[in-house]
Amino acid sequence: LLFKNYILLFIFNLIYLLGHILFCIEFIILGIPEMIILNIASIIWFIFNAYRMTAHDMEHYTQAEILIMAEIILHQLVAFYFVGNSCGFQFILLSCSCTLFTLYKNRRSKRSYLIKSFIMIFLFILIECFGRYHNPIYIIDPAISNIWKASIIFYAFVVISVCTLLSY
Image 1 (tube, one colour):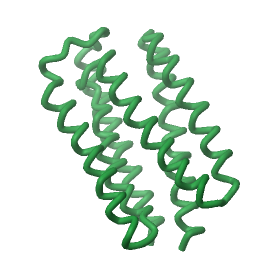
Image 2 (image 1 turned 135 degrees about the vertical axis):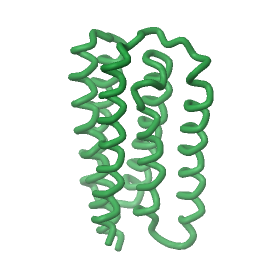
Image 3 (image 1 turned 180 degrees about the vertical axis):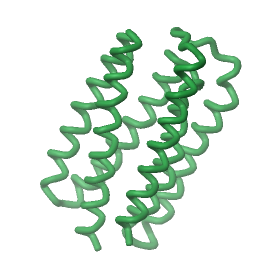
Image 4 (image 1 turned 90 degrees about the vertical axis):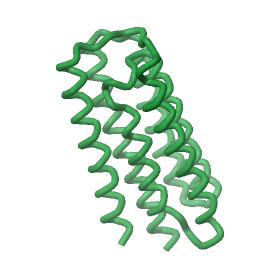
């Protein structure tokens, strides 16, 4: 069971690594340097995290979970600040919230994952509620942001689907 959790978390990490590579390309196209830098840092973060996970011990597993959550939360808040909520980055918080439950190892850790999940859902709600009051630094053309939002929602459901499928 523990080895399966390592594999799931490793795949979860790789999926988010791939997502950040795609986000970096999109921000290069849009010319948003702050988000390019953040995504390059995120790519390095996820590569480092994947490398650390190859140690296969509980300490690295727990640290990997924390690193993934921290990066996702940081990324969502910075993306919200720079591009607002029109691009749909907040939906990644929901995907992370759902996939956390595929990782829990025993009944005692279920409470920890429930708390982590509620943190993600709470941030999603905050971004959704305050999004209309926040003027982002960069205004993205509505046609582009709608396509981006649809692709991020698709990406979020792929993350949920893959992690759920692999958890059985």
